[in-house]
Amino acid sequence: MSEKKPVNRPAPEVCPPWLCFTFDNFLRRMVQNPGRILRPYIKPGWTALDVGPGMGYFTITMAKLVGNSGKVIAADLQPQMLAGVRRRAVKAGLQDRIILHQSTADSLGISEPADFCLTFWMVHEVPNRAHFINEIAAALKPGGLWLISEPEFHVSKANFTQTLELAKTAGLSVIERPKIFMSNAVLLKK
Image 1 (cartoon, rainbow, N blue to C red):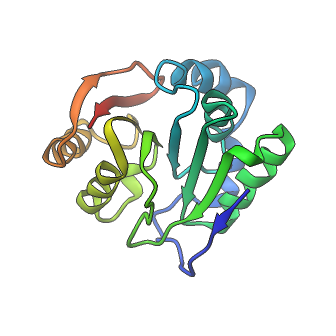
Image 2: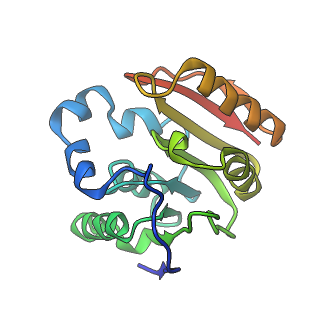
Image 3: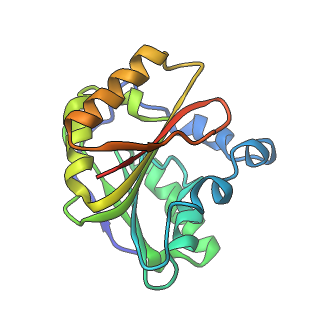
């Protein structure tokens, strides 16, 4: 498992590592099952980007879906989150498929083109959403997919609509509105 580490401090709006341990449990898997959510969008051999992966709730499933010839880039601000992803990847025997990447508060810093990107319940934490969306749009290959999911109890419809408008300005098109429990979700295509 390779890793890139810049020095930075997470913004105060970012979900703290202690809270992420509560995100992976039996009840959540019943209503937000990673395989059920991601299987329609990720293909074997792809490069998938998991931005703000927390402790790897979706990352491990993404690594299974891309198969032996694919890879997942798990990008997070917080080294504690990436350490959690590393532990889970090793436990699942998938560490060779996952690249850990520590982003900075100012830049995602991803240079490798991706076929798929997931941002699950984290876009609202980004201080400069327009810059962030442009970075992801630039990281996607032509025809690449981006699944955005935001918590409907925390992100207003107006805020989510603003995110979609920024995505359209960045050259992305809405192709689907997946139903994800307690979420506003959209699948975009470059």
